[in-house]
Length: 311
Length: 223
Image (tube, rainbow over all chains, first blue to last red; front, side, top):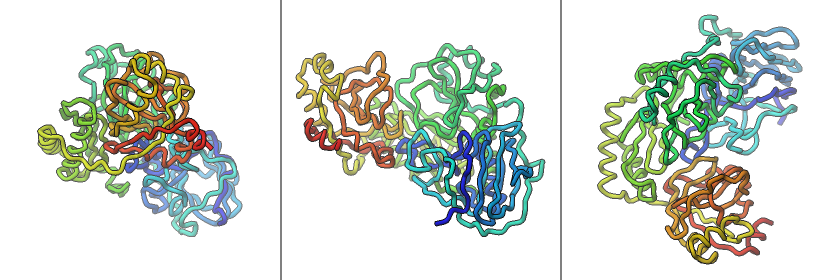
C-alpha cells in the first residue's frame, strides 16, 4: 500500500496519539494520549474528524513530512512554526497540500508540543482501544516508540474535502508565562504536616527540565513530612505525588496506574493541557479548587468536543 | 473509608488486610459498584482499595458515597464469592545460579532449597494488584515459612523473568531493571518477549500458578 506521506524528519520526540486508553488500565497500562488534549481535539475538529482520531504529537519541532497525495491536514498546538515548501503556513488551521509538498514544523517561540491531524485520522494499529504510543509500556511497533525518519504514513480519508478553516484568535488557548493550577486535595493530604500543606500552596514552584510525558516535575522548597504509604494506591489523572526528595510532581498521560509514594491530591484534568505546553523554568502555583467547578468544566469540554463514554 | 482524589473519582479503602481476602472483598465491591453506579468509566482494584472513575455529566459525590458505603458494608459482612477464571501458569526454575537470593532465603528460613521451591510453587496465588512496571503483578499470599522482607538496598539490575519474594508477596519481573525483591527463581525470559502478552497477562483477582521446571527444561525454553 502506498503511503500518503513520508516523515522525512521526526524531530526529537514525535509519537502517534489520540485520547488515550481506559481498557488496559486494570492491567496496569498507562492512559497515554495527547499531552495537550485540547490542541489535539481542535486539530481533529478542524478536519471534522472523530474526536478520538489518531494524530501526530510533535515535541519541540524539528519535523518534516513529504506528502504523496493531495489532501488537507490540520496544525494546532502552541508555538509551532509550520511552513509548506518554505512558505509560512501558520497554525490552528487546516492546510491544503499537493503531492510532493513538504510541511515543516519548526521550534516555535512558545510551547512544547504541536499536533498534526489528518482527514479521517491516521490509519494505524491500535491496542487496548487506542493508538496512543506509550514508550514506557513497550507495546509493539508505533504503539511503543517514536516515529523515525522515513516512516510511511497513511490516513483514512485522504480525499476528504473541507474548507480552509482557521480557529478564531479568541479561541486559541494562550501559553501563559506562569501557571496557576487548580488542585483538589486528597489521598494523604491530611497526613502531611501543616507546614508542608502551606508550602505546597504558597511556594512559587518552577517546572523542572526532567519533566516528560510521565510527569511534570517541580522544583522548589522540599517538603519534610512525607507520610509513609504502605501499599501502592490507584492513581487518577493529574495526581500530585511527593517522592523521596520531598518535591512534588504532577502525573501526566504516561503515568503509572498505581503509586507507592505519598500523594497530596490531583490537579484539574484540564490544567494538564497547560502543563503539557509549559517550558522548563515556567513558574507554577497551586490553588485549591472545588471539585464540582472542575467537574462542570470537564462536562462542558466533553459536550463541546463530542467525547463519549467509550474507550 | 471513601475519599475523592479527583473531581470524578472515588477511592474506597476497606478496613481489611491487603491480602488475598482483601482483594476478594474489593472485587466483590467492584461487582456491586458496577451495578449500583451510573457511567463508571474506570475501575482499578489494588490490594484493599478500589478506585472508581465516572462521567462528569452524571457524577454526584453524595450519591456515589452513599451507594459505595452501602456496597462496602455488604462486602465486609462476608467474603464475596469471586470466580477467579483459569489460572495463569508459569514455569519457574529454582536454581541458585539463576536466583541469587535462593540460598540466603533458604538458610534464613532454615529450609532446604528444594523445600523453598516446593513451598513457593505449591500455592495458587491471587493477583492483589498490577502496576509498578507494566506487566508486573503483586501476588499473594506467600507461605509464611518463606516470607522475607525485601533487600535493604535494591539491586541495580534484576534480569527479565526473575521471581521475587517481598514479605507475603511474590512477583515476576517482566523486564530487566532495578528491583529489591528476594530472587528465588526464574521464568524463561522468552515468555516476556511478546509485549501485549507481557503487559496483559495479569489482572487483579486472577490466579497464578508456578510450575517447577529443572535447569534443562529452562534452557530448552530459552532456546
